[in-house]
Amino acid sequence: MTETTNQPTQAAGTTARAYGAPAADAPLHALEIPRRTIGAGDIRIDIRFCGICHSDIHFARGEWGDIPYPAVPGHEITGVVAEVGADVTGFAPGDRVGVGCMVNSCRECSSCQGGTEQYCLAGNTQTYGSVDRDGTVTYGGYSDHVVVDQDFVLRIPDGLELDVAAPLLCAGITTYSPLRHWGAGPGKQIAVVGLGGLGHMAVKLAKAMGAEVTVLSQSLRKQEDGLRLGADGYHATSDDATFEALAGRFDLIINTVSAPIDIGRFLNLVKTDGALVNVGAPPEPLPVPVFSLLMQRRTFAGSAIGSIAETQEMLDFCAEHGIAAEIELVGAEQINDAWERVLDSDVRYRFVIDTATL
Ligand code: NAP
Ligand code: ZN
Ligand code: ZN
Image 1 (tube, rainbow, N blue to C red):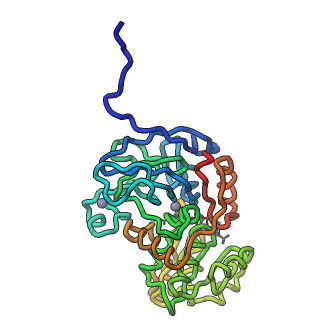
Image 2 (tube, rainbow, N blue to C red):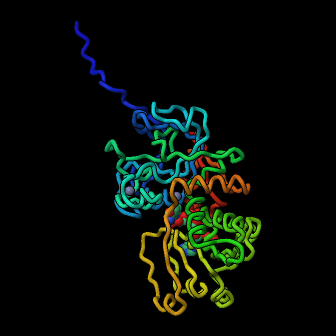
């Protein structure tokens, strides 16, 4: 009798244990996802930790637009190299590595050629919810392993533990990049709006760059933490006196808030020629009163993550300055609760998933 089993003609990749949302309004649960066969330039990473970014929630809940389900979020990934493709030279099994928000880009446009591939004109390939080069949808780091092109893999410096390093891959670089771009340093007054995952990294990084840092939080509930993290000042935005006392004070304000805020009120806290940079990504438009811009030649700008080279620079900067995230480690069963706490502004200051629990 002839054997009639269909044998695949090429290796079919691997199956990863993961946690994801089956629909916009459903809790996350355990599931399995495919990972592509490792290509010549690819690295297979055993994921150890993955941070929970507020973007994971915006995305999986469909707030930024329709997405394919199941949605497996996670773009603050750290782990260990398990296997490398034939053309991989810079990494070897056992290396401690990280993956952030993007896993590929076109490599040909002016942004990619100019070293700002996060602004790839063709749109970079996001770690989750993008169409990958093999036509499949990318799944993020709430999973036990991932296959990533070597050019988008970061090196975690010695001295940075993998759990507290994970949030640097998004929260770290997203705040580091605008701080550098807008010249944070000695003599500069920087305000950080929102003391959550991004906000607490912005405080630590701006302080390490030598700037004077002020937190603008909804209340004084987290004041002690903010000062411990390095802030020189801490004010409640629920108090109108804050906006009078700090008028025209800041060279740079980084707004990390995940919801719409009254941009005009915050613009009035910016000095002549200063900037308010939005990294928070609420789906709703933010109305901008133009007189708050033109009267003091202020800038209202945005910024998205950072390039791979800048992300490596940020990781090295953090290792050099002894900076990492303040985390609460959670198991798979706690992810839904952690999301609720993020939505309640009750995160201190980043939830990180121990992927051994998946
Ligand atoms: P998070 O941990 O939830 O922190 C956001 C903070 O904003 C909260 O802790 C809270 O701080 C404040 N906040 C929340 N709701 C508010 C409201 N209604 N009014 C005023 N303040 C409020 O979130 P995250 O992970 O840091 O992310 C923040 C935002 O950045 C999200 O929209 C995310 O999608 C976006 N993001 C953008 C990029 C990028 O490349 N641009 C990258 C990563 C994330 P207080 O309690 O101190 O007020
Ligand atoms: Zn993120
Ligand atoms: Zn490009």
